[in-house]
Length: 402
Image 1: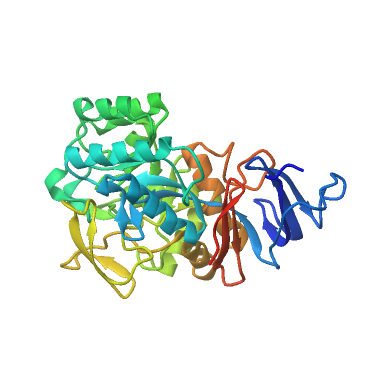
Image 2: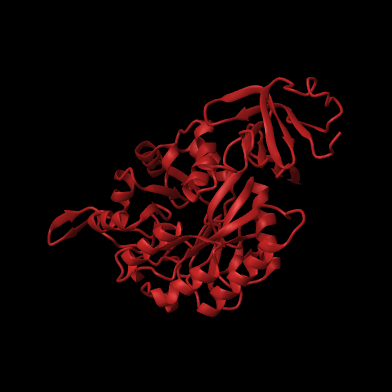
Protein backbone atom coordinates (compact mmCIF):
# COMPACT_ATOMS: atom_id res chain seq x y z
CA UNK A 1 0.00 0.00 0.00
CA UNK A 2 1.25 3.48 -0.85
CA UNK A 3 2.39 5.22 2.32
CA UNK A 4 0.94 8.61 1.46
CA UNK A 5 -2.68 7.41 1.48
CA UNK A 6 -4.47 8.75 4.54
CA UNK A 7 -8.08 9.02 5.73
CA UNK A 8 -9.91 11.47 7.95
CA UNK A 9 -13.02 9.88 9.46
CA UNK A 10 -15.76 10.77 11.97
CA UNK A 11 -15.78 14.47 11.14
CA UNK A 12 -18.27 17.15 10.17
CA UNK A 13 -16.97 18.00 6.71
CA UNK A 14 -17.49 21.66 5.78
CA UNK A 15 -18.10 22.26 2.07
CA UNK A 16 -19.38 25.43 0.35
CA UNK A 17 -22.77 23.77 -0.15
CA UNK A 18 -23.33 21.94 3.15
CA UNK A 19 -21.80 20.31 6.20
CA UNK A 20 -21.56 16.52 5.87
CA UNK A 21 -22.25 14.94 9.25
CA UNK A 22 -20.14 11.89 10.14
CA UNK A 23 -18.09 12.37 6.98
CA UNK A 24 -14.50 12.16 5.92
CA UNK A 25 -11.78 12.56 3.31
CA UNK A 26 -9.33 10.36 1.49
CA UNK A 27 -5.95 11.97 0.78
CA UNK A 28 -3.20 10.65 -1.47
CA UNK A 29 -0.17 12.24 -3.09
CA UNK A 30 -0.80 15.50 -1.23
CA UNK A 31 -4.27 15.86 -2.78
CA UNK A 32 -7.85 15.15 -1.81
CA UNK A 33 -9.21 12.20 -3.78
CA UNK A 34 -12.60 11.56 -2.13
CA UNK A 35 -15.07 13.40 0.11
CA UNK A 36 -17.72 11.16 1.59
CA UNK A 37 -20.18 10.30 4.36
CA UNK A 38 -19.34 7.37 6.60
CA UNK A 39 -16.25 5.28 5.80
CA UNK A 40 -16.25 6.10 2.10
CA UNK A 41 -14.19 4.00 -0.30
CA UNK A 42 -11.83 2.43 2.24
CA UNK A 43 -13.24 -1.11 1.92
CA UNK A 44 -13.88 -0.89 -1.82
CA UNK A 45 -10.25 0.13 -2.43
CA UNK A 46 -8.96 -2.56 -0.06
CA UNK A 47 -7.32 0.09 2.12
CA UNK A 48 -8.46 -1.08 5.54
CA UNK A 49 -4.88 -0.71 6.81
CA UNK A 50 -4.42 2.90 5.67
CA UNK A 51 -3.58 5.50 8.34
CA UNK A 52 -6.70 7.08 9.84
CA UNK A 53 -7.11 10.43 11.53
CA UNK A 54 -10.11 10.20 13.84
CA UNK A 55 -11.68 13.67 13.79
CA UNK A 56 -13.79 12.75 16.84
CA UNK A 57 -16.65 14.92 15.65
CA UNK A 58 -14.52 17.97 14.84
CA UNK A 59 -15.30 20.22 11.91
CA UNK A 60 -13.15 19.23 8.92
CA UNK A 61 -12.55 22.45 6.99
CA UNK A 62 -10.48 23.53 4.01
CA UNK A 63 -7.18 25.06 5.06
CA UNK A 64 -7.45 28.79 5.62
CA UNK A 65 -5.97 31.24 3.11
CA UNK A 66 -4.74 34.60 4.44
CA UNK A 67 -4.19 37.24 1.77
CA UNK A 68 -2.74 39.88 4.10
CA UNK A 69 -0.33 39.25 6.94
CA UNK A 70 3.04 40.69 7.89
CA UNK A 71 4.37 38.48 10.62
CA UNK A 72 3.89 36.32 13.67
CA UNK A 73 5.80 34.38 16.29
CA UNK A 74 8.20 37.30 16.77
CA UNK A 75 9.21 37.64 13.10
CA UNK A 76 8.17 39.86 10.19
CA UNK A 77 8.57 39.21 6.47
CA UNK A 78 10.37 42.57 6.34
CA UNK A 79 13.19 41.11 8.46
CA UNK A 80 14.53 39.81 5.16
CA UNK A 81 15.63 36.31 6.22
CA UNK A 82 14.44 32.80 5.44
CA UNK A 83 14.35 32.15 9.18
CA UNK A 84 11.81 34.96 9.52
CA UNK A 85 9.66 33.46 6.76
CA UNK A 86 9.74 30.06 8.48
CA UNK A 87 8.89 31.57 11.86
CA UNK A 88 5.85 33.38 10.47
CA UNK A 89 4.66 30.21 8.73
CA UNK A 90 5.01 28.17 11.91
CA UNK A 91 3.07 30.79 13.87
CA UNK A 92 0.09 30.99 11.54
CA UNK A 93 -0.38 27.29 10.97
CA UNK A 94 -1.53 27.26 14.62
CA UNK A 95 -4.56 29.27 13.52
CA UNK A 96 -5.34 26.96 10.62
CA UNK A 97 -3.75 28.98 7.82
CA UNK A 98 -2.30 26.63 5.21
CA UNK A 99 -1.60 29.25 2.51
CA UNK A 100 -0.43 32.80 3.22
CA UNK A 101 0.35 35.80 1.06
CA UNK A 102 3.51 37.36 2.48
CA UNK A 103 2.82 41.07 2.88
CA UNK A 104 5.40 43.85 2.84
CA UNK A 105 5.16 47.37 4.28
CA UNK A 106 6.05 50.85 3.15
CA UNK A 107 9.81 50.84 3.67
CA UNK A 108 13.14 51.74 2.16
CA UNK A 109 13.83 50.12 -1.20
CA UNK A 110 16.75 48.27 0.37
CA UNK A 111 14.54 46.66 3.02
CA UNK A 112 11.87 45.84 0.46
CA UNK A 113 14.30 44.08 -1.87
CA UNK A 114 15.84 42.21 1.05
CA UNK A 115 12.39 40.90 1.98
CA UNK A 116 11.63 39.88 -1.60
CA UNK A 117 14.92 38.00 -1.92
CA UNK A 118 14.36 36.16 1.36
CA UNK A 119 10.89 35.12 0.29
CA UNK A 120 12.24 33.72 -2.96
CA UNK A 121 14.91 31.71 -1.14
CA UNK A 122 12.30 30.26 1.20
CA UNK A 123 9.91 29.45 -1.62
CA UNK A 124 12.56 27.72 -3.75
CA UNK A 125 13.54 25.23 -1.08
CA UNK A 126 12.41 21.64 -1.41
CA UNK A 127 11.25 19.28 1.29
CA UNK A 128 8.45 19.42 3.86
CA UNK A 129 6.97 22.80 4.69
CA UNK A 130 7.62 24.04 8.25
CA UNK A 131 4.08 25.36 8.54
CA UNK A 132 1.81 27.42 6.32
CA UNK A 133 2.65 27.60 2.61
CA UNK A 134 3.91 31.08 1.57
CA UNK A 135 2.58 31.13 -1.98
CA UNK A 136 3.18 34.70 -3.11
CA UNK A 137 3.84 38.32 -2.20
CA UNK A 138 1.52 41.24 -1.50
CA UNK A 139 3.11 44.68 -1.83
CA UNK A 140 1.31 46.86 0.69
CA UNK A 141 2.81 50.21 -0.16
CA UNK A 142 4.59 52.49 -0.68
CA UNK A 143 1.92 54.04 -2.97
CA UNK A 144 -0.40 55.37 -0.30
CA UNK A 145 -2.16 58.59 0.70
CA UNK A 146 -0.48 60.26 3.66
CA UNK A 147 -3.81 61.22 5.24
CA UNK A 148 -4.83 57.55 5.40
CA UNK A 149 -1.41 56.01 6.03
CA UNK A 150 -2.30 54.51 9.42
CA UNK A 151 0.80 52.62 10.57
CA UNK A 152 2.57 52.87 7.19
CA UNK A 153 5.92 54.66 7.55
CA UNK A 154 5.51 58.24 6.25
CA UNK A 155 9.22 58.49 5.42
CA UNK A 156 8.85 56.20 2.43
CA UNK A 157 5.44 57.02 0.95
CA UNK A 158 5.54 57.89 -2.74
CA UNK A 159 3.42 58.15 -5.87
CA UNK A 160 3.49 55.11 -8.15
CA UNK A 161 5.98 55.45 -10.99
CA UNK A 162 6.72 52.82 -13.66
CA UNK A 163 10.42 53.42 -13.00
CA UNK A 164 9.85 52.16 -9.46
CA UNK A 165 7.33 49.33 -9.80
CA UNK A 166 8.11 47.85 -13.21
CA UNK A 167 11.60 46.57 -12.22
CA UNK A 168 10.10 44.96 -9.11
CA UNK A 169 7.33 43.27 -11.07
CA UNK A 170 9.78 42.11 -13.73
CA UNK A 171 12.25 40.63 -11.26
CA UNK A 172 9.73 39.13 -8.84
CA UNK A 173 6.81 37.37 -10.54
CA UNK A 174 6.00 36.11 -7.05
CA UNK A 175 4.26 39.47 -6.55
CA UNK A 176 0.61 38.52 -6.93
CA UNK A 177 -1.00 41.59 -5.39
CA UNK A 178 -0.31 45.31 -5.04
CA UNK A 179 -2.24 47.68 -2.76
CA UNK A 180 -2.26 51.38 -3.65
CA UNK A 181 -4.29 54.56 -3.22
CA UNK A 182 -5.91 54.94 -6.65
CA UNK A 183 -6.33 58.72 -6.41
CA UNK A 184 -2.57 59.30 -6.45
CA UNK A 185 -0.89 60.54 -9.63
CA UNK A 186 0.06 57.51 -11.69
CA UNK A 187 -2.13 55.07 -9.74
CA UNK A 188 -4.65 54.46 -12.52
CA UNK A 189 -1.84 53.60 -14.90
CA UNK A 190 -0.49 51.24 -12.23
CA UNK A 191 -3.88 49.52 -12.16
CA UNK A 192 -3.90 49.10 -15.92
CA UNK A 193 -0.39 47.62 -15.93
CA UNK A 194 -1.20 45.25 -13.08
CA UNK A 195 -4.27 44.04 -14.94
CA UNK A 196 -2.16 43.26 -18.00
CA UNK A 197 0.21 41.23 -15.82
CA UNK A 198 -2.58 39.36 -14.03
CA UNK A 199 -1.62 40.92 -10.68
CA UNK A 200 -4.40 41.78 -8.23
CA UNK A 201 -4.79 45.56 -7.91
CA UNK A 202 -6.28 46.54 -4.56
CA UNK A 203 -7.35 49.97 -3.31
CA UNK A 204 -6.05 50.72 0.16
CA UNK A 205 -4.85 53.46 2.51
CA UNK A 206 -6.87 55.73 0.28
CA UNK A 207 -8.72 59.03 0.61
CA UNK A 208 -10.54 58.55 -2.70
CA UNK A 209 -14.09 59.63 -3.39
CA UNK A 210 -16.70 57.20 -4.65
CA UNK A 211 -16.19 58.49 -8.18
CA UNK A 212 -12.43 58.01 -7.96
CA UNK A 213 -12.95 54.40 -6.91
CA UNK A 214 -15.24 53.93 -9.91
CA UNK A 215 -12.42 55.23 -12.12
CA UNK A 216 -10.05 52.82 -10.39
CA UNK A 217 -12.37 49.90 -11.14
CA UNK A 218 -12.35 50.87 -14.81
CA UNK A 219 -8.53 50.93 -14.65
CA UNK A 220 -8.25 47.43 -13.19
CA UNK A 221 -8.70 47.64 -9.41
CA UNK A 222 -10.93 44.79 -8.24
CA UNK A 223 -10.33 44.54 -4.48
CA UNK A 224 -10.35 46.71 -1.35
CA UNK A 225 -7.60 46.44 1.25
CA UNK A 226 -8.94 46.07 4.83
CA UNK A 227 -12.28 47.81 4.28
CA UNK A 228 -12.89 50.74 6.68
CA UNK A 229 -9.28 50.71 7.91
CA UNK A 230 -7.16 53.47 6.35
CA UNK A 231 -10.01 54.43 4.07
CA UNK A 232 -12.24 57.44 3.36
CA UNK A 233 -15.95 57.45 4.11
CA UNK A 234 -18.75 59.97 3.71
CA UNK A 235 -17.59 63.58 4.07
CA UNK A 236 -18.65 67.09 3.11
CA UNK A 237 -17.07 68.90 0.18
CA UNK A 238 -18.39 72.45 -0.18
CA UNK A 239 -21.26 71.54 2.17
CA UNK A 240 -22.40 68.59 0.06
CA UNK A 241 -22.04 65.03 1.29
CA UNK A 242 -19.76 62.93 -0.88
CA UNK A 243 -19.44 59.16 -0.64
CA UNK A 244 -15.98 57.71 -0.18
CA UNK A 245 -14.03 54.53 -0.69
CA UNK A 246 -15.89 52.64 2.03
CA UNK A 247 -19.23 53.23 0.37
CA UNK A 248 -17.80 52.19 -3.00
CA UNK A 249 -16.54 48.96 -1.48
CA UNK A 250 -19.95 48.20 -0.02
CA UNK A 251 -22.00 49.15 -3.08
CA UNK A 252 -20.01 48.07 -6.13
CA UNK A 253 -20.52 44.39 -6.93
CA UNK A 254 -17.40 44.45 -9.11
CA UNK A 255 -15.28 44.91 -5.98
CA UNK A 256 -14.34 42.23 -3.49
CA UNK A 257 -13.28 43.34 -0.02
CA UNK A 258 -11.20 42.06 2.85
CA UNK A 259 -11.85 42.74 6.52
CA UNK A 260 -9.78 42.41 9.67
CA UNK A 261 -12.40 40.54 11.70
CA UNK A 262 -10.30 40.41 14.87
CA UNK A 263 -13.01 42.07 16.95
CA UNK A 264 -10.82 45.15 17.40
CA UNK A 265 -10.60 46.91 14.04
CA UNK A 266 -14.33 46.67 13.35
CA UNK A 267 -17.23 46.49 15.82
CA UNK A 268 -19.94 43.84 15.44
CA UNK A 269 -22.31 46.32 13.79
CA UNK A 270 -19.88 46.97 10.93
CA UNK A 271 -19.07 43.28 10.56
CA UNK A 272 -22.79 42.64 10.17
CA UNK A 273 -23.17 45.52 7.70
CA UNK A 274 -20.32 44.32 5.49
CA UNK A 275 -21.60 40.74 5.60
CA UNK A 276 -25.11 41.90 4.65
CA UNK A 277 -23.89 44.11 1.78
CA UNK A 278 -21.23 41.87 0.24
CA UNK A 279 -22.05 38.29 1.23
CA UNK A 280 -19.54 35.48 1.72
CA UNK A 281 -18.53 35.27 -1.96
CA UNK A 282 -17.12 38.83 -1.93
CA UNK A 283 -15.51 38.96 1.54
CA UNK A 284 -12.06 37.65 2.42
CA UNK A 285 -11.10 37.52 6.08
CA UNK A 286 -7.52 38.64 6.75
CA UNK A 287 -5.45 38.83 9.92
CA UNK A 288 -3.16 41.72 8.89
CA UNK A 289 -1.05 40.20 11.65
CA UNK A 290 2.25 41.68 12.78
CA UNK A 291 5.19 39.94 14.45
CA UNK A 292 3.44 40.04 17.82
CA UNK A 293 0.81 37.50 16.72
CA UNK A 294 1.14 34.49 18.99
CA UNK A 295 3.51 36.37 21.31
CA UNK A 296 3.25 38.00 24.77
CA UNK A 297 2.16 41.63 25.02
CA UNK A 298 4.80 44.34 24.98
CA UNK A 299 6.82 46.43 22.51
CA UNK A 300 7.53 45.22 18.97
CA UNK A 301 8.67 46.53 15.61
CA UNK A 302 6.27 46.85 12.68
CA UNK A 303 8.36 46.11 9.61
CA UNK A 304 12.03 45.21 9.70
CA UNK A 305 13.69 44.75 13.07
CA UNK A 306 16.28 47.39 12.11
CA UNK A 307 14.18 50.16 10.54
CA UNK A 308 10.58 49.38 11.47
CA UNK A 309 8.25 51.50 13.56
CA UNK A 310 7.72 50.75 17.24
CA UNK A 311 4.31 49.39 18.20
CA UNK A 312 2.80 48.55 21.56
CA UNK A 313 0.58 45.51 22.13
CA UNK A 314 -1.70 46.08 25.10
CA UNK A 315 -4.76 44.00 26.03
CA UNK A 316 -4.74 42.26 22.68
CA UNK A 317 -4.54 45.46 20.62
CA UNK A 318 -1.53 46.64 18.58
CA UNK A 319 -1.08 50.42 18.65
CA UNK A 320 1.32 53.04 17.42
CA UNK A 321 3.07 54.48 20.50
CA UNK A 322 0.86 57.60 20.56
CA UNK A 323 -2.23 55.37 20.17
CA UNK A 324 -3.32 57.39 17.15
CA UNK A 325 -3.85 54.28 15.03
CA UNK A 326 -3.97 50.52 15.15
CA UNK A 327 -0.84 48.81 13.85
CA UNK A 328 -2.20 45.58 12.43
CA UNK A 329 -3.57 42.75 14.52
CA UNK A 330 -2.29 39.94 16.68
CA UNK A 331 -5.00 37.51 15.56
CA UNK A 332 -4.73 34.10 13.96
CA UNK A 333 -7.17 32.96 11.29
CA UNK A 334 -9.50 30.80 13.38
CA UNK A 335 -10.30 33.82 15.56
CA UNK A 336 -11.63 35.62 12.49
CA UNK A 337 -13.89 32.69 11.63
CA UNK A 338 -15.18 32.56 15.20
CA UNK A 339 -15.91 36.29 15.20
CA UNK A 340 -17.88 36.14 11.97
CA UNK A 341 -20.05 33.44 13.53
CA UNK A 342 -20.41 35.02 16.97
CA UNK A 343 -20.34 38.74 16.12
CA UNK A 344 -21.67 38.93 12.56
CA UNK A 345 -24.15 36.07 12.73
CA UNK A 346 -22.73 34.20 9.73
CA UNK A 347 -23.30 30.45 9.50
CA UNK A 348 -20.10 28.51 10.10
CA UNK A 349 -20.10 27.24 6.52
CA UNK A 350 -20.04 30.82 5.20
CA UNK A 351 -17.50 32.02 7.76
CA UNK A 352 -15.19 29.22 6.60
CA UNK A 353 -15.84 30.18 2.97
CA UNK A 354 -14.66 33.73 3.70
CA UNK A 355 -11.39 32.31 5.07
CA UNK A 356 -10.83 29.77 2.30
CA UNK A 357 -12.68 29.63 -1.02
CA UNK A 358 -13.35 33.36 -1.39
CA UNK A 359 -9.71 34.42 -0.88
CA UNK A 360 -8.64 31.58 -3.18
CA UNK A 361 -10.89 32.95 -5.92
CA UNK A 362 -9.76 36.52 -5.35
CA UNK A 363 -6.08 35.64 -5.76
CA UNK A 364 -6.67 33.03 -8.46
CA UNK A 365 -5.69 29.75 -6.77
CA UNK A 366 -9.18 28.27 -6.40
CA UNK A 367 -8.37 25.51 -8.90
CA UNK A 368 -5.92 23.99 -6.39
CA UNK A 369 -7.02 25.29 -2.98
CA UNK A 370 -9.89 26.81 -1.03
CA UNK A 371 -12.34 23.91 -0.73
CA UNK A 372 -12.42 20.21 0.05
CA UNK A 373 -12.83 18.99 -3.51
CA UNK A 374 -11.17 16.00 -5.19
CA UNK A 375 -8.09 17.09 -7.11
CA UNK A 376 -7.30 20.02 -4.81
CA UNK A 377 -4.46 20.12 -2.31
CA UNK A 378 -5.01 18.19 0.88
CA UNK A 379 -4.90 21.36 2.99
CA UNK A 380 -7.20 20.77 5.94
CA UNK A 381 -7.90 22.23 9.37
CA UNK A 382 -9.83 20.51 12.14
CA UNK A 383 -11.83 22.76 14.48
CA UNK A 384 -13.61 21.85 17.70
CA UNK A 385 -16.96 23.26 18.79
CA UNK A 386 -15.25 26.40 20.12
CA UNK A 387 -13.55 26.77 16.72
CA UNK A 388 -10.14 26.20 18.25
CA UNK A 389 -7.66 24.43 15.97
CA UNK A 390 -7.13 20.75 16.77
CA UNK A 391 -4.99 19.89 13.74
CA UNK A 392 -3.62 21.55 10.60
CA UNK A 393 -2.69 19.50 7.54
CA UNK A 394 -0.71 20.85 4.58
CA UNK A 395 -0.59 18.72 1.43
CA UNK A 396 -1.62 15.67 3.43
CA UNK A 397 1.06 16.09 6.13
CA UNK A 398 0.12 17.02 9.68
CA UNK A 399 2.09 20.17 10.51
CA UNK A 400 0.37 21.25 13.72
CA UNK A 401 -1.35 19.65 16.69
CA UNK A 402 -1.74 21.53 19.98
